[in-house]
Amino acid sequence: MIDLLYFAWVRERIGLPRERVETTAATVMDLIEELKAREDRYQAAFADLRALRVAVDQELADFSAPLSGVREVAFFPPMTGG
Image (cartoon, rainbow, N blue to C red; front, side, top):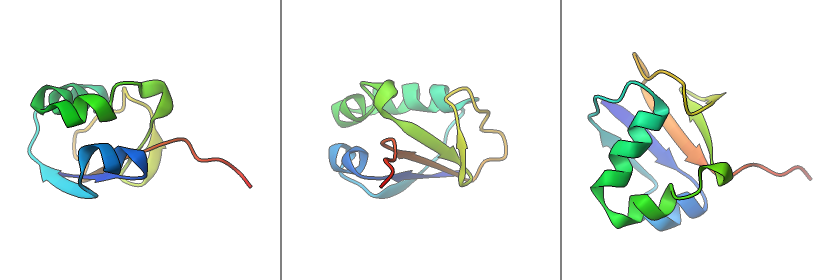
């Protein structure tokens, strides 16, 4: 089981701040494809990956990051400084 966390507009499009999923995905990208196949709301949230960042077990990662042994994946828009 992996805990998924959604922030900002990602959370708004999916309608949940977090959920726990069982997955066979090998990478973050595989997980995204599984989620997009679920429902339109996931398709909308993950439509433009250029506008999305990911953290795996609270470390910034890219979409090719492996999920073996991972407990948490967080999706969020890019952060801006200020």
